[in-house]
Image 1 (cartoon, helix red, strand yellow):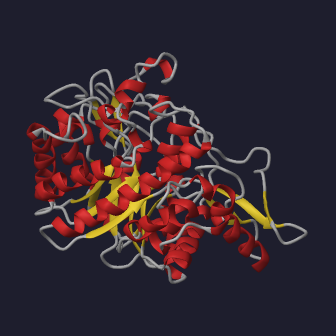
Image 2 (image 1 turned 135 degrees about the horizontal axis):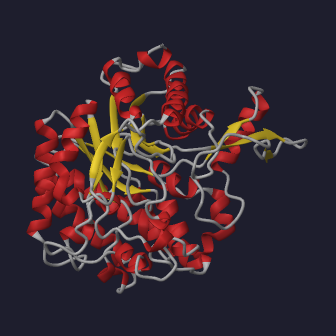
Amino acid sequence: MAFPEGFVWGAAAASYQIEGAAFEDGKGPSVWDMYCRKPGMIWSGHTGDIACDHYHRYREDVALMKAIDLKAYRLSISWPRIFPEGVGAKNETGLGFYDRLVDALLKEGIAPYVTLFHWDYPLALYHRGGWLNRDSAEWFAEYTAAVVDRLSDRVTHWMTLNEPQVFIGAGHAEGRHAPGDQLRFAEIVRASHHVLLAHGLSVAAIRARARKPCRVGFAPVGLVKYPASDRPEDIDAARQATFAIDTPTAWTNAWWMDPVFLGRYPEQGLELFGGDLPRGADADLKTIQQPLDFFGVNVYQGTPTRAGRDGAPELLAHPVGFPITAFEWGVTPQAMYWAARFFHERYAKPIVVTENGISCRDWIAVDGQVHDPDRIDFTTRYLRELERAIDDGVPVEGYFHWSIMDNFEWAHGYKHRFGLTFVDYATQRRVLKDSAHWYREVIASNGRSLHE
């Protein structure tokens, strides 16, 4: 049992969650800057104005990545830092920041994996209709082109969108994330199509403009159903449930993944709400289905599933006392195995785990260190399941731990700590946690230390 040679061991973060400098050096406001000003929306009134101050402290943070011996770092670009109005005049100072960050990473032998959109949509474009406006796809392609023109002489790994289920579902349907809307489901369907079209045009822009051969993917969240037993009928039920669409909701896999990888919307979704797709949606599918090199997926938890009496999938509740994280998510390492297996079966692409991690209640101990045994145990369990998928023939290219450092956890503010690095927000002091030292050993041994 071993991870393949050349396996990419990384960690991840996102621009709005760590950068701060929200109103500096020509950056325009994002929908998250706006949402943080809505009373009662963010825990304890927190904002991303300063966050981890990564914008000013990126050299220190890259040094921490080097101390862990990361092979790759998944970062995201702030769209309004590049285009303060979303389109039009570029902000050279913003581009310069990412220039310096990429150079600092490469100097330390850390490969940058760039995500173009991790939720900080330009407020100026939201005022022009945002994702409800079909032009949003062209706006995103224009932004993509500017970033690729600037960075693709050095960046060779790209992702378009992070977790569209979340920024549409939580942000536009439920109103608990930016921009805080609660749209009719017909508008959710329209926005989702424009998001997918934006993905396709973005990939086309990357392919057309990249100055070096590159690998391109995107990073939806994996909403995993795993079999409650190893009975074939339970496995079939879990597979069916993972891709099912049985209610009007943005929280699906197939609605977002099938058009991208298979060039069609899933029949179940079309039967339920396909009539709300914009006119001409079918003609857009060729644009949406661009060639991709890997299937990026964020995996945190899953739901046990069995075949009911009629063979239909039956989702099960966890038993009383089941282990949960500080976010109250179930600790379900099996989800990692079945995510890799099910998504590879359906989409026939190599898997990259673009996020996986755990929120813990970490603090600096009396000895000055940060002891997080739960994170080490959690990650060991999930990585062993990923290794099991590899042993069973699933091609898995890399794993990115969420997150490299504690950060702004969206509507939860700074309540949750997901980092390998502890951040004291009052002083911006960083402390590598026990898990960071442990992860360094995992990387050095290419995963063999997981069995020691």
